[in-house]
Length: 416
Ligand code: CTP
Ligand code: MG
Image (tube, rainbow, N blue to C red):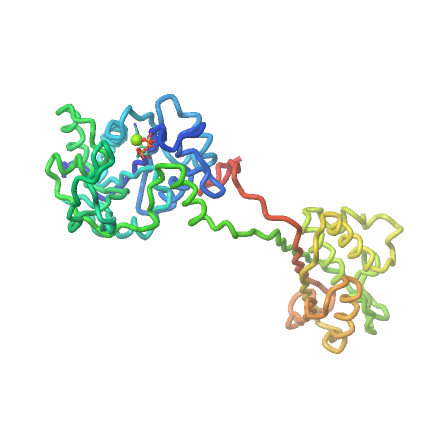
């Protein structure tokens, strides 16, 4: 390696400058959908999430910067883009020259047409790379190979022993593969279909490691359809389950009892504040409202409004439930934790659960009421107030929408 080579740096070049003619359609295959995102974005995601690569370059069709950026969405900021050439070989050379100044130790060169490569494969390649040796993942040929003439007649049968199908990424010491590409270009060769063949031509030692069966190349429509069927589970369903939480606290003052989870408990204090000050039902209302992003109890029932003074808090819960029902939501379960030094909650728990079951129309096993003291610590421990935390799970009809088109889905969302 050159003296100024940064041996610790590894970069990746993703070749996506082809037209995808064999696949056809209105746009090059790297922009076609695979599952819920464009093929290219899936490839780019795999590389930028791989922590042993410091820089990712995507080689895009000449004049096609905008289309590439669009299909990458928020990931476009995480990679560099350069326009490629007329052949794969030229595009690879353009990509390699791009990193010439940086002079990294190693480079992975990958076809965007193989969107299903795994981090496991990158791990195996990285572990095998050496300063003088290139690595190619390849799989032994299992079909019997026939040579066929123009007339469609079989001419001969090849011995498949020692024959492998080469995949990408193919990875090399950077300066060696750059020199090999420059040499091939100088010699007027432009017909190499992978980088290993350019390296062989130049005389680089290249070793095979076992490729991955799933790392298929998308060439035809069938390939794309199969990949969509096989690797992106068509049965996958993303239920729209939403969790909301709520917290409330009310002060205690001299009185004759507290109302918690709708149950009045005799006590030398009472809770002060909004309505009957049932902290548990207030926290529960907030948790329910949270599942539809509808703010909190104060938005719907302003504390300054005299009509709620002394009101039974079940009306707030019912209001939140009705809003949820408008969206077709179904309550799955709720969990309430009361934090009170006194009174003891356990003797009243069954009644509370029964009250909530009726109020919410839920089976008892979907309702949890728990209580804890505050170990005499703080305002709760000094019996100055009681707090409650509530969690609600609500299922809504349909699926969680895919994040496709979400411009902020990169690893480091841009700052506002
Ligand atoms: N490629 C490239 N520059 C080119 C030609 C191809 O970067 N001038 C890339 C493709 O985008 C693809 C990879 O090289 O990721 C392998 O090429 P191939 O499967 O042949 O893709 P296309 O050339 O796009 O498809 P086709 O040959 O069917 O037109
Ligand atoms: Mg091609």
